[in-house]
Length: 148
Length: 73
Image 1 (cartoon, rainbow over the protein chains, first blue to last red):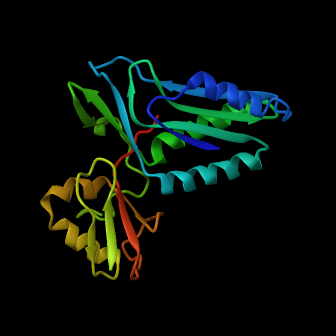
Image 2: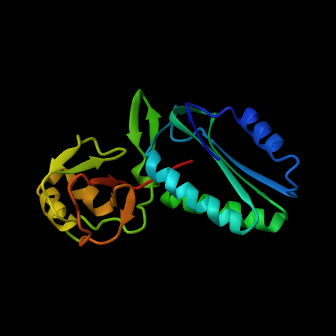
């Protein structure tokens, strides 16, 4: 349940679809997180590159973790440009009880930020500028460097 | 032949190299001054699996990917 879209996410459609898919699955909790592009630092929007093979295997590992807790995880992300006040990311957990879903969405989004192979760029004055200062080196990075 | 891909913001075309392990790759890439900063902060995957040791062996047809710092969402 990993969905990639070219450009901004159709948030209402996705949330409605996910809600309806699980409406009779007997989950007591549905906790979505929606990430929306904010106006800051004079950006016009954000842009994303994704390396899908590793994103897919990363997500598969989280699907298994969710299963072990009796939960399911769904995620949607944008590729390419997403302008101000549009959304680029949705993650959602369904679980029998709320506590598992609340904890799981937090863990999942934190690891997503630290590990998912997605690169963010600011769109500013017609340029696409890599957001290095807001990015996180994946665990184990630097082995090819002189200090590695 | 080993293919080396530079992902995301590293604006560099792929390389094809005759090497036997990641140590040899490190030596070659460290000669490229433009890559020095990237080498310090990139993760490395072999055939789309992240690796943590330069001793990782490489065989003909393997694909090595360099992954710079990430920021999804």
